[in-house]
Length: 81
Image 1 (tube, one colour):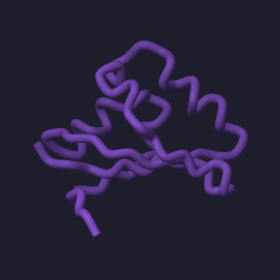
Image 2: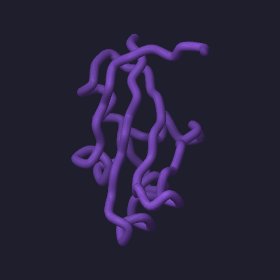
Image 3: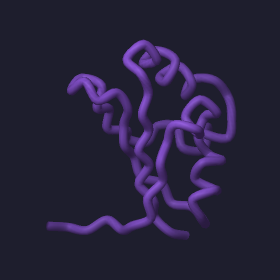
Image 4: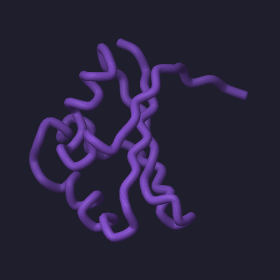
């Protein structure tokens, strides 16, 4: 499994919908409860989190439908400074 950084973006008026998408049942149930860094308070609406998966397509398949088209997936690794 590889590690991926997911960066989701949405419009300011979509904040509620973006949050609510996680509460509906779906394949993303397996990743509920993970930390998510929300950048909405800075005015850059969206967030960041990491996932392990076989490939970027597998990462997108785990996301709520609302997030799939507005998320970028980056392969990488966690490092300690």
